[in-house]
Image (cartoon, rainbow, N blue to C red; front, top):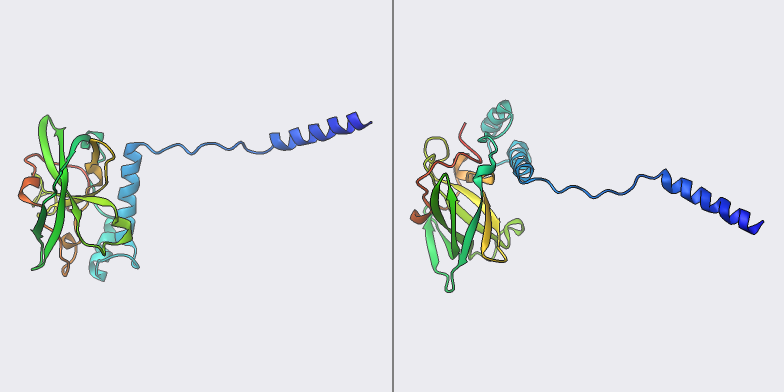
Length: 209
């Protein structure tokens, strides 16, 4: 009798477990999906009346457009750069769109191939101890390219990158965004240094309307 009861209980447990959905691992998004998510969140921020920096007129225009304009997502603009940190980082003061000078530490140099050309960019780190929490620990990569002033904002575009743990740095230009100054007055946006002006057209990330 006891054995029969145990078998019955085991069968009930088995049936109840069989009816439960099995836990599945959440698939990691692809690189293109990550960039698409970044672009969607960036656009949502500008469209949100509570978070946007846009005045009512510019917000209404952006709402008509359905969000920020982007170049088509392209995996060719996601590059693995050889990264060399500087042993004795130089402190530089970059001019901005205002009279203010922005101070950065030149953290290292990223070298990569894009469009068949070997290119390099300096990667910076802010010296400001009061940086917003979401940017704490990130590196700053401001750049200009052959689209600056025509297809993209003339003052350049930015990328925020996690610090590399080794000698490789992933740079996804699909996540390139324009500074606030591209959309509204009254902001102080760092101008990319001369060594960060690329001779090629980077048709990835945010573009002009």
